Amino acid sequence: MPRIQNDPNLNVCPDYTSEDFVNTRAQLINENTTEEQVVQLLKNIWTANNRADKRLWQQQVNDDNEEQTHRNRLEEEEEERLNQERAKEEEDARKEERKKNKHKYTPIQNGSRIPDDPAITPCSYVLRKLDKGEYVELWYFTNDGLDEAVIKKTVDDDAMILSTLADGSTAWVSSASTRSARSVINDENLPFEEFCQACPRFLTALEEADWPRDRIRMMALFWRNLQVHRYRSLRDPIAQKTLLVYQSEQRRRWHVVAKSAAGPYDLSEVNEKVLEDTRAKVYWEERLKRDNARDYKVSINVRQSISSLLI
Image (spheres, rainbow, N blue to C red):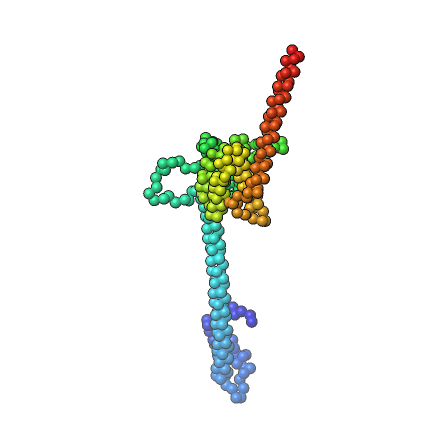
């Protein structure tokens, strides 16, 4: 049905007695109907039509109001949805900011003061690797590693420098990674005393990096079991070296497997078979070093003897 453009409540009944309706009245007047009756008939017809138009008009107004109410509700719901999305995005951004810069938002403890002992503060390069759950050498938590972190604080760890890689190519890398590559000592080459020194500091750093409790406990048991292993008290120098090599190799492998489809396994219990295999490997590596050193010394003596005979 076409829309009614004008409000019929504002319409006024025409004056059917006027000259404008002479022809209309003439067509309706007959022997049974007078002119006055025709005028009344015309008024009655107009009034009936006007009432019908009013009903249609009111229905149209009601429909328009209902449609507008529905449209307003949809707009309000859409606005509410957008507000919720914006609020969620802002909350997610705040959470991400707190996650990336968690130390910035750590609340100050009531009654706290400057501690008597300085905090363990490895370089930011190490902290970022721990936050990602990646492998980090224990050397960073020895006295030498922590001292270097303090000394190098004046250099921005995030600064990018051009470095030559092992294959001869060049790439932009962080200054912290290049410093570490030059000075870091691999776990297997640490003195056993420094290994024991670094472990509790490492565990504290794992807690601050929000590692899962089960992984922190696993690492603690892993290192404790190595430190109390019977190899620790043997007079054989190969024994302690074996523990250090086992620790380094197994922890590296664990980090590799943890990122694979197989997932992480429990590292804490010492695998005696793997440890014995490691001891055999360490023995032959040390044997080869001694043999090479002996052969080198013999060759030097031989050359010196020959040189003295030729003089």
